[in-house]
Length: 118
Image (cartoon, rainbow, N blue to C red; front, side, top):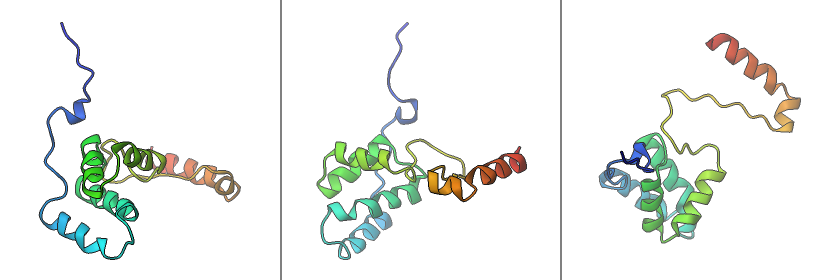
């Protein structure tokens, strides 16, 4: 029996994200940014709007469109916690747990969310 190391979420080649209206929106945004690299964050937000998460295939597509390396795009995506690299539910609640947020009551907020949501 053979086991595949492939990601089951990307077993099939997904359709491109940037076609039709989404591509038009990206191109319209491009005039507002000084470089294609500066357009990376808005491009990733368009992926999130379209798909709900940023897959490896979408990262590669963005890299190709913007003339960036896939490694650079992946570095930005994985550094920023607002870009989901796996499917998430329709409602996604995230509580900041940095020291400043902790001083402002983040733990109490988290406990209240957990208590109310079960």
